[in-house]
Length: 306
Length: 191
Image 1: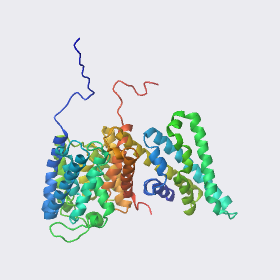
Image 2: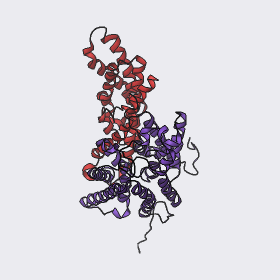
Image 3: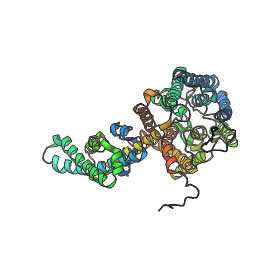
C-alpha cells in the first residue's frame, strides 16, 4: 500500500510578506533621519560611534555563532540594528573602546547567551547601555553641545525653565547623539507606523502616562516628552517585537508602565533619566503581561465551565 | 507618608533579592514556574510579615528589658522556624500540589536569610511596630515580585537554544544579573 502522507501544521496559516529581514530593513530606513541628524549635530563623533558599534555587534554575532557551530544569522539584520541603536544612544565623547565593549556585551550577554534573536528577554541595545552606564558612569554622562565640543548640561539636568522647546524639537541641545532631535525620530516613527512595524499602543501608552504624571506633579508635559531619551526609547526601543507583549491590553499596560517608571526616576530618582531602566524593567514583566492579558478564546463564555 | 517610603524602599529601591542580594537560594530554586514562584513568594511574604511583628515584640519587650540582645539571632530564628512550620502544615492540608511543587524549599524558608535580615534590619532601623510590619510587607512583596519576574522569563526560555554550559542555573544567574541591573535604576528614589 502506498504510504499516505498527511501534513499537519499549526496556525498561522495566513502569511504575509514580512520577514525578519524586511522588518529590520524597515527599522534601518526609519533610523536614517535620526542618523542624519546625529551626523549633522555631532559630525565625526556620530559616524565613529555608530560604525564602531554596528561593526562590533555584527562581529560578535559571527564569532558567537561560529564558535557554537550554528548557522549564521547576521543577514537578517538584527545584530546590525542592535549595533546602530546602541551607537545612537551614547554621548558623543564616549571613547571608542567603551563603545565596542558595550556593543559586544549587548550582543553576547543581551542576546546570544539566550539562544539568539527571539529568545532574548531584554532589548539587547538597552542591556548594552545599562551595562555602560553602570560600568562607566562618568563617561556615560559627559555631554557636550552640538557643533562645537563645548561641554554642557542636558536639558533634563537644566530643567524645564531653562530649556527652549523649539531647540528640543529640532535637536540642537546636548544629549546622546541620536536622541536629541525629536523631529528626526518622529519622521522615523511615522515611517515605521506606515509600514505596519510599529504598534501605536506602546508609544501612546508611554506618552499618556508621562503626560498624566507631569500634570499631576505640576511639571511641563511637553518638556518631558521631548527631552532625554523618551521619544527615541518609545519609538525604537520599547516597540521591539521580541521584548514587548503580544496582546493589545498587554501593550497598553507595558507602555503605561514604562511612562510611569520614567517619571518616577526622573522626578525622584538619583539618575536624571530613567528610560533605559524603565524599558528593561517592563521587558522583564513582558512574559507575565502576556500571560495575564491572554484574550478569551472565541466561543468560550466568561467562566463557562463553572 | 513615612510608611509609604518604607514600603517603596523595601519593595523596589532596596529590593531584598535584586539590590541587597539576600535570599538568592529560593530565588534561583523555585523560579522555574510562575505558579510555584507565586506560591513561594506569598508564603515568604506571610512569614516576613508575621516574623517582623513577633520579632519586634520579642526585641523590645523581652530581649532589651532583660539585657539579652545577644540572644537576638537565636530568638529570631526560632520565631521564623515556627512560622514556617505553620505555613508548611497549612499548605500541606489546603494545597498539596503547591506543597509538592515547592518541595524542600518550603521548610528552607526558615534559612532564607532575607527573613532574618529583615527582622534584624527592622531592629537596627529602630522602626516602630507598624513601621516594622510595613517593612516586612514591602520586603515580602519585593521578594515575590523578583521571583515571579524571573520565573516568567525562565518559563519563556524553556525551548530556547541556550548554550549547553549555561543551561539551568547559569542562565538564571545571567537573567538575575540583568534584572538587578534594571533595578539599579531605582537608586536614590527614597533616601
